[in-house]
Amino acid sequence: MKVLLINTFLYHRGGDCTYTFALGDMLKSNGHEVYYWGMNHPKNYQYEYSNFFVDHIDYNEINSKKTIQNSIKVIKRCIYSFHAKEKLRHLIQKVKPDIAHLQGILEYLTPSIIDELKKNDIPIIWTLHDYRLLCPDWHFLRHGMICEQCKRGKYYYCVLHKCKKKSFGASLIAAIESYTYNLFSIDKKVDYFVAPSKFLYDKFIDYGWPKEKITQFYYHLYPFPDLNIDKRQKGDYGLYLGGLVPWKGVDTLIEACQWIDGYQIMILGDGELRYKLKKQVYNLALNNVKFKGHRRGEELISIVRGASFLVIPSRWYENCPYVIMEAQSYGVPVIGSNIGGIKNLVSNQEDGLLFEMDNPEDLAKKIRYLVENPNKAKAMGMRARLKAEREYDPNGHYRKIIDTYEKVCKG
Image 1 (tube, rainbow, N blue to C red):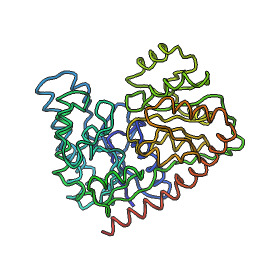
Image 2 (cartoon, helix red, strand yellow):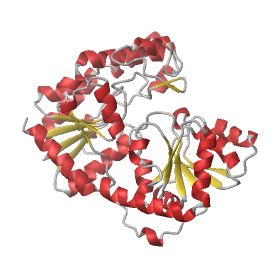
Image 3 (cartoon, rainbow, N blue to C red):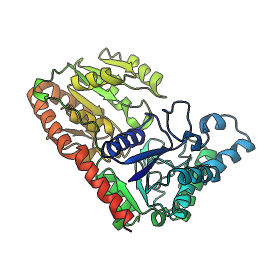
Image 4 (cartoon, one colour):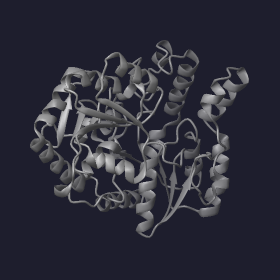
C-alpha cells in the first residue's frame, strides 16, 4: 500500500512529529511504501520529493512586523492555502498514493489540502493530536485557566478575551480560522479520525463530532524499548521532561520542591519561561532543582531510565503525552496532574500517582510518598512497564492502523 503521511513539520519537534516518524518506520518495516509531505523547513530531514513541499513561512517573524501586507500574507496562508493545494496536486500526480494519513495540518497546510485529496479520490484518515478543531487557541485555556466558552461555534469569545497571545489581532485570526473549519465541514470530508486518548475522543464527541467516524487507540512506541526492569539501576532524582511554557505547569512543580526535603528534581527542556522559572527557584532559595536544558539520544534515555519518577504537572488538557508512555516503557512511575489525557495513561496508586492540578502541596505530598516508599515506587514502575507492553506495542498498533486503512479504502 502507498501511504502518504502529511504533517506540517518533518523534524523532531513535538508529539505529532514523533508519531509521524514512528508510524512511517513501522509501515515501511511491514513492506508498505511511505511518502512524506509537509512544509519545507531549515531543520527538516532529507525527503524524496521535497521539491513538492510548501514554502517555509515563519508566522512569528512576520507578525513581529505589524503591517497590513503582513497580515494579509498570514491570512492567505493560515486559513485556506491555494499554494498548498497546488504543491500537493503535483505530488499526488507523481506518487499516486492509495491513502493519505493526516497529522498536524492546520495553520500552515490548512484544510485546503483535503479538497485536493478528495478531488483525486484518495481516502483520508486524520490522527487528532490536539484540540485545534474545537478551540481557537487549541489549549482550552484563557489566560492560564481552563475555558470552554467557545463550545459549539461560539468562537467570538476568543476575540473578546484575547485568548491567543493576549492579542486582539492574533485572537481574531484564530477565531476566523475556527469559523472557517466549521464552514468547511471537515467532519464530513475526512473519512475517519483517530483519537490517541479516551479524553480527546470524548471531548470531540461532546462537541458534536460524529461518533461513527472516530476510533480511539493510543500512540505506539517504535522501536519498543527492550529491557529487564528488575536489573535497572535507579537514580536519586525525580524528573520533568518537556517545554518550559505556561500550560505545562512547571512553576507548580518548582513551588512543590520547597516541601520535599531537598530531594533533587531535574528539569529537562527549554522554552519561553526558562528565565522566569530560574528566578522562581532563586526567590524560593531552592538548592534541589537543576535545569539541564535539552538532552538527546542515549544520554536522554539514560536520564529517563535512571529517574525514580517522572512529574507531569500540566494545567491543560494533555492529549496522549509521549513522555509518559516512554517513561512507563522504562519502568518509571509517573506523577501527573489529574486533568485531560493524563488520567487515561496514569492509573492512580497502580502505576503512578495523580495530584490535584495547580496544587503544589498535593504534588509535594505525592513526591514524598514515592521517595519514602521506594519499594512501592518500584512496584508501580513494574506495573507501568507491563501497561506499556500491553497498550503501546507497535504490533498491536500496526494491526489497528491497517484495519482502519482497509476499512476506509473499502468505503
